Image (cartoon, rainbow, N blue to C red):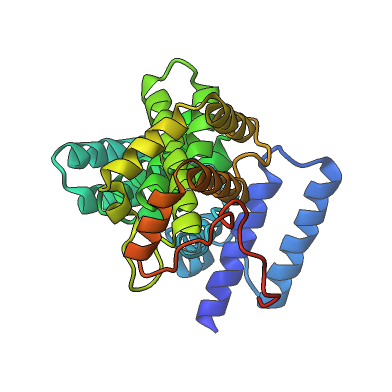
Length: 323
């Protein structure tokens, strides 16, 4: 029963702290006083007695114990909950740990850096910088999903934290999710318009999306990427194919199509979804068939696919009705 009384004593002390915190109205404070008296009576505890205090007192108060447990759970399920602001002493200690983590990053001791940032977060889990720094360390050891999670936590605390968007973009790029990376860099640049790094990364993501659109066109029109067949790399090694692709990309109509798609992405519309990319790739494949049907048929034969019948390459094949 001693452990139960320790818990009850901790609850009483917590209620007493709340009652004297000057954050409650008089009626609320009176209700807490009634609750304290009921607990003391039910468990025969006199919180003003020195012997009782010595017997049941624990070093950490109930709220700190609760917050510590919540921090452990947060590492597993994304959610950081805190009912308690870090004390000035805890914030100071957390900042020391953060700086220690930064030193580990400079010396490329990334696992040690993660540990330092994690220790800082146990003391002050409302600091977006600590999450963002840990995200950078996670990226260094290729734990990109963990990096994304930490960036999301940082943005929950500070939705205008541009660096969190930038580092999340880096993680998405490493996972080859260029559409998500583009959106992260776009948001980062919106919050920090003069950051050249965000601008450069945004352009790289845009280029990757353009390449995806072109690859989709080759795959749909020529059979690239099919099991047992040459992939897009084999196509790009063909000088005639590359020359035709360059001619297509210099076509004003194709450039306008690309610009409209990217504008839709930058405005958060539907222009940047994968269906639009596939549609553009399909149009590219049709243009290739129209411009040089002999080259297209030659490539199809090389990849083990029958050539298009004359006049049959301007439209995609009709669906056979199966999923």
